Length: 400
Image (cartoon, rainbow, N blue to C red; front, side, top):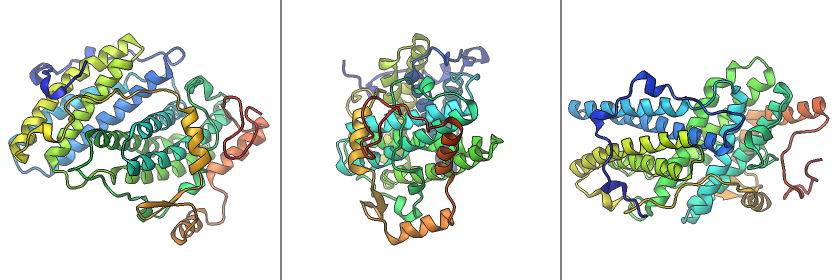
């Protein structure tokens, strides 16, 4: 049935505060949980973190004390939601296991968004980025096998392939070439705005995660790989955040954030396989409906428009975590040699790209390449998880 969150009523804000017992959620079982349940958890943690960060930025630019207090009340509930969501992750999982799950999110969420995106320019931005996250998954999977002596297939199951994408060392670009052209807030369809906000939030959380956990490793190759890929994740955040029209007012951005939270919680409630986790998605949806109502009132008051003028009249088809193997392989076969120049894409290396490569590499082999060399030396081969066939670009036999 159609679901219009602007016409629904959720839990009143005064009734949303939870005590410690309610926040002390039981984590998922890493050995038996659906890998995509973990992906949904990681996604919603990123969405909630972005909601909190955005609310803080809005408060810092808001001179009205009463409005700051209202934002603070909602933000406190968002912070509780973030804790409940992120604490669903099991404490027994290592940082590297969680890292591999983060990259599975980046691959299958971005691929799904690219497949569903109606705007060709925006779709190209997601297709470009997903081939880089696909390669990050491959690099971390080799690190995981080398230092923890385990295989990434236990984490990603057979849902996401693990093999080379666009080589990670080629992701280091001049900052100017990470900025894309934004969508036009007046003509872009609502689903495109939700897609941009979703992927920006997910990549931002990945960047934050790597910045904090990278130096916790003792192994030099692990510290160096997190540092290298962490720098690239910053490029990805720049890449995706630049897609959002900066002409949106603070109140329109707040409205879009709250609508997107409703969209994603509703999507995951509809697709979740774990009943316990599904109940959390449902609870948070009913909380977010009230947050959206409050944001809509602020939008009407300060922008002088109806929320229906900028939001979809009903929620789009649910965001779905599902395998994207064929789609990724098609992209590998057709787009692996792309790089960026200005707001566009080119197939030939250009002066700014080559200058950045020289500055970053300084004649040394990067960590993302050395981790493959090191694992091949220790294990006798590099780690891959692939279905039958050949690599769509290199023609290499799979599962060798």
